[in-house]
Image 1 (cartoon, protein in one colour):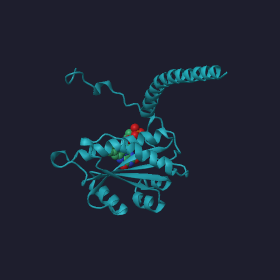
Image 2: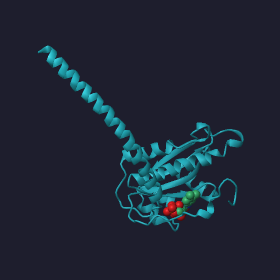
Image 3: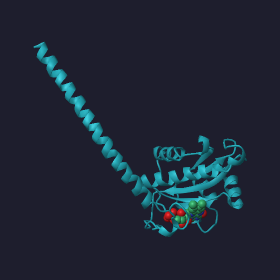
Image 4: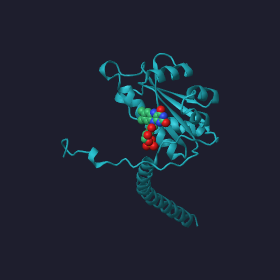
Length: 210
Ligand SMILES: Cc1cc2nc3c(=O)[nH]c(=O)nc-3n(C[C@H](O)[C@H](O)[C@H](O)COP(=O)(O)O)c2cc1C
């Protein structure tokens, strides 16, 4: 009886193991395919959103957005950034001011200021790489927001001095932090169609003009 039980158990374990292997293989293939599709779809359907509902964004979602930002590539892996999460309507109002986009700022329930940190940036001629690094983080956050059902828009600060000064003042940024942009976010209250930007004339092959 013991022997029969042992054999049955061994058989079951082997079956589970083999199914597991097959399953994983399939999953790997399927996941890779799906991931490709999901990534392309997310990239191609993202568009700037400037009107939001009053639904707030959960702390978990905010963390996912920040993780996406910090997953971006950076020169020499310096990660020369600091992110200021804004969910206080008073701060949001101060950032929006009385400008032509003040309504968008009033509606937004979340914003993330993406700042370059000069104390963490490369030294020497590579220092301005912080701009590309923070831009990559910004695009990651925009795509993650879209993938998570949020709407978002990049509002530029650096290199417009007046905007840098205003955002730095409102957010009380130390001198080493330079706001590249503020990503204004929330759940979308509009559904603009993504713009078709495909222009083959903007591409050359091997040498310019071919
Ligand atoms: C550097 C930069 C600065 C931007 N600043 C603003 C801004 O201040 N206000 C705004 O509404 N959109 C701003 N945008 C968003 C652009 O207007 C938008 O990306 C562009 O019109 C293309 O539209 P799409 O994002 O829907 O593809 C900015 C985008 C970038 C990359």
